[in-house]
Length: 220
Ligand SMILES: [Cu+2]
Image (tube, rainbow, N blue to C red; front, side, top):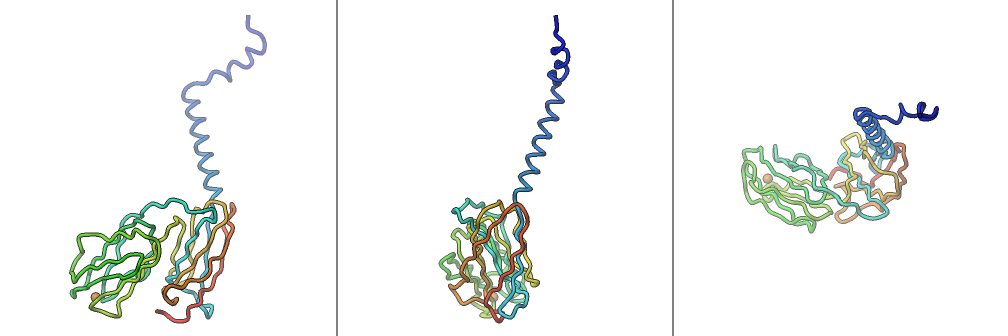
């Protein structure tokens, strides 16, 4: 014979498969929401030596605890139009491939002698068939053998957390897990092979604002 307790508890013990499914779904949604809440954004405001907004500045956030694996980004394009590279500064992760479409009627001869990536795309029109793989972290300086005024920079990041500022100097690095990071800043106007000393910043569960100045005075 059923006891009083059995009668009272039985209805809640018997769970239909759909109820179980729903409960599982709620758990997953709750889990995703709490993960998103744990990662924060870092809002950067970068200025030059005079305090003016600095575009084309690059910020890299490297975990103080050591490297994390990075995945290559989808292919990027660094085009040539009106005898200029577009964009001038590109930030990618290690292993990302770049294509160099030429939209001018003149031919270009794109090269880099940088240790990060040495390559040469000899005089060409249209899109060279083989993308260039940037497989080492660092900065590659690009030029054109025909047009001396053409210059561009590829920053190859060994971290998934990076940003490049538009002209207003504001950029945001999203979804940064809590922890201690080294913030490294770079700009093409810095003398070659120099960069400001990294700054340690701590990311918690809420967005943080970080103002920084890079000691460049003029456009490169
Ligand atoms: Cu050229």
